[in-house]
Length: 263
Image (cartoon, rainbow, N blue to C red):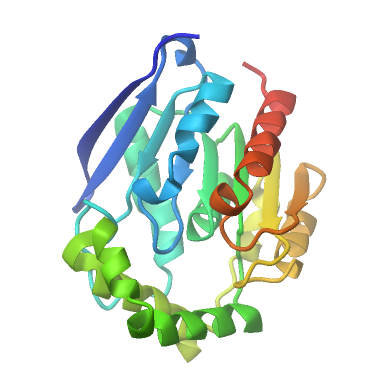
């Protein structure tokens, strides 16, 4: 397999500057690019090297980026709009992919990133979508999990941990995430109406012990997408399969890509 070259760039996308990492191989030319979309408090480093493993196993090129407010990208605009996930899927991600010349990507999303991937796939051509801990509505368990996270914010030095990855943006990022999901006006947020328009293979992975969602989430998503959706539930895994069940998650992703690849 050809040698992988890793480069970081900064892209001006609409009114923001976004940090982008490219993992490229000669063997990945003229094939779909794997595009990784991080979780609600994530960044490139918090994938913990998982994209490199997927790139190595598949031989495909990878693009990872940090959304506005995360990592080294531009700070958040506050207050954060309640439709922030739709805005990312409908405006920033399409523009970024267009600027980078990435067509029909394979989207790999975690949590918020998974939701963005699903919405994007309903609106634009993609080769396939692979998700971990996707959500399209607010459950009681989601609220309870985020309330616990806010209680631990100072007690468990969460801010200091986030500052390692997001710098001075960490407090704004954490409270924008928490305040959005705990906002009573957000309680009725629901993105399931996008799902029937998805017409590509979709893998839905969730940890059996996910602290932010029940398995009803992926059951609903699969039902709305139809026969092209496949569910994988990982035992002894909570909200972060790429960390808590890395090998099983990697095997599931790569097997799904191999099964459905047309390139």
